[in-house]
Length: 476
Image (cartoon, rainbow, N blue to C red):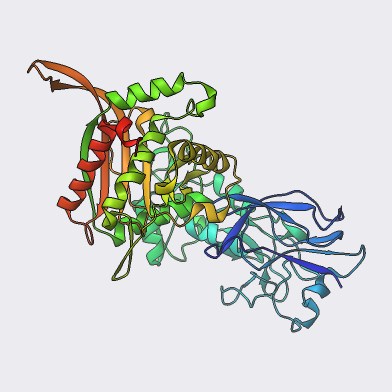
């Protein structure tokens, strides 16, 4: 019996994974531990092993597909074996449409089936005699979002006011990249046009009166207007000599989409309030300089200013337990231990690995763990358990020259600390003379639903004092 390879579950909170790329093709022989594809979650990239040795009989998903966990992605068995039988395709009711195909009469998705692809006798890009449109759900969704829904004319599948669609998928199936290619030749739509189309009753022409042919609200036509009438309707279609230039539209998906959704929910579901302050940084800079030139035996030469800040935060937080907490509905959950989230910029987007039990670690251990986790995130090798469970987060933009900013809460945490750059500011000396001293900026965002401004300000004041005397705090 052939082996059905399913999308593995990568952590309890992961609902789907994106196939980054296949490492094998149909007909290849694989061992049980052969990596057949790379998949991406909102946290990291993983390899998926074959699970059993044999021949790749069928790849069920394509590169770029966002696949729910535990859904079949490939079939592995003996050469010549019926891969469809492994999926129970033989039990499909006669005449039922393939998975994701659309009924031409109803315009709605047909019943699900594990095996995708057009039925025997279907012609690529044409509606079958039974009324099936060989169109994948992702292709249909892309067309709808672009304001160019799929239409059927004389048995041919095309975009509304657009070209006929050819299918490059298995068996001539129309897939997402076919729709994306067709959209490139059509005029872009304004945001107002997209909203109007979403309300129904209107359709967009192939070209509009806006710059570079962009379709504006005044160009919209009543639904049912034939494409042939467009040439004589609306304003002149002449394009200006100087257009907008190239426009690139990139779908927001994968980790970028998850970051966007989380940031939106964080702001929508909490009362965020930011306090700004600055602390003397002379001892911080002096200590960093001494450590940098220290011998390797001490293990401190690679300690950074950010590591020193992380150390200070881990020691001050236990004195303010309401800051080291989660808001879960109507419950405030405080933590004895400090599990410190550290924001890391990666090619895939923002990630927040966690230094666990940071309040119990020495400076050199905090420094080493911060570097290890950052490297794992940037290399795509961070484990799911290393990217969850933080109780307080630190994000540092000081190295980029930022002097003040407003961090967004890493929900369900109730506070996040933003660290800015060090700059010279005027200060009065012991003799009363005005001079300049280096000061480091802090921006503390709190959830005002459970943390008030004054207690948060006391935490920020205590942190500033700890940073100002960081050398003394290291002796504790």
